[in-house]
Image (cartoon, rainbow over the protein chains, first blue to last red):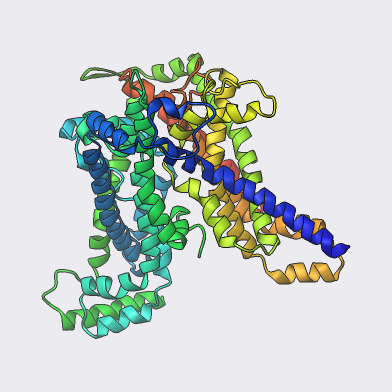
Length: 276
Length: 305
């Protein structure tokens, strides 16, 4: 009796959990199917549950109305450059804060922590004025530079660099290695998992970012994916097939990366909040 | 003390061995923090100060003039601003508890029952957290269409009349909450799951020996042990919700009748639709103050521990 009660309660939990999985995943499936249907079919009831044959047509019209290849490239280029440079400079700063004693260290670190607490919205207006002054509207650097030094990434790298033993740094110095060499050949290799998590975090935040690009980009050929998608909604007649395909294409690359690297990914997106 | 000695030691080593390098142990930390720190000074510290000054100014084209507290006093008489505050807090108070409850429920379900395929569940539940908020909002905008959306179609099978999800003030807020919950539940669930895995199993074993029931164990061990994780997720979700923008911007553009206008959305409209920079800066500073107060309260709550 007790045994069967246990099994049925386990079965109940299973069913609820699977229902939750369906709710989490179904919108993705719906998005995939929708991207292969013409606009009208997406709103047909009962809904189509299998992909149609309109994928190529949607892709063509998406490319015509937005220049989608260029927009995809913009997003990819911005996110990659941003991730690489930001990971590097936050690792450098994190290393200095974790492993050196120097005058003003506490003040510098305090300022960085303060910027971590302030909502970024407060910088929008002056940053926009700055971009206008520099004549940087509709440029890559306008998107990349303002958030390039991420206080959060610096903080995380500092925490991770702290656990690198002083002795291996000492040993390299005794061997006559220069400071740069120590950083690149000793420190970075041992903190690779933390760097990967930080890089994924930074990439995702840039790839998905809407508000700042929306403010600085107004010419179509410079749009990033989120801005381009939001511009499709603003149109007088929304082509839903296009919209679904654009949404799919902006999600699929991330999804593939996620499925390949899921452990790194989860700890990256959680910003190192969870140790895997 | 130990550390200073080490630094001194390395300095002598260094000077002997590589004289040519421009980097010395003395200047190397400055060189290493310089890129990040300069960027933060230019693109964060300066704008934060500049925005504060702007909030006391009126901007007309290229002309700026000081107007004292005029922006703030206008703000406190602005019904739309009050509405955006109210909406943000209504969404916060309803959404965060529902989401965290669901996250905890799923995490406990996954953790407790020795399920097969835990990894599969974890990946599936986390999937929404990798999508752009824009993408999630677009998909839900279509799913929630009043006449042809899948959600109302499915609801019709259980006899529910079509719900005007995006076109009436009440349901528009519900829609925003729905999208946020879909997007973030798995994210928080994974945080809870990690928290659950960190609870020492001896605690449960001891409780079982003492004859405590599963339910009692949950309330006497699981909940208190999870408290720090819980506070962490509450702080994170609260700050995120205070800055809510993408979902209402895509789903409803703040409508209908400003029912989904949020603080950040209103700031965006004041700043970049009406180019009222002084006014927008005042909104931004109110957001800073609200965030500071809430963070302070939450820190006090943690501090009591």
